[in-house]
Length: 134
Image (cartoon, rainbow, N blue to C red):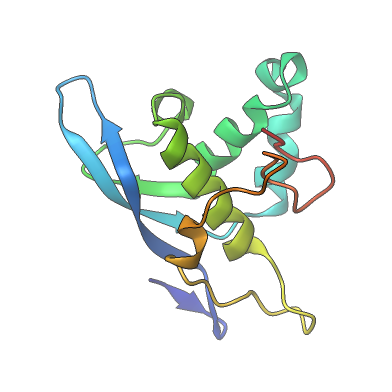
């Protein structure tokens, strides 16, 4: 867990199920960094997002998840291969980790709290307008 300028910039997590790679290896522990404006804006230009808004979540998560198990790279194909429950877990973690308190400081993130079931409406990544609704 990294901290800079007095606030947390990375968070470690453990996926509920885990990603199974092509060799059959299970990857559950990872690291997510705080998102930048570019992480939320640049993927909007991607043709996959323009065809399907739900794909925004895949690209954004691929940008901010910096480590997953022993994988060399976390790219959109890895995020596509996650089990639905793990994708939902990462979306909730992203929302909580990137949210701000009224004073502008990032919220303290309780990873266990981010494991709660998704909202009944099934929408995720609601932090900025309709970014990454899934």
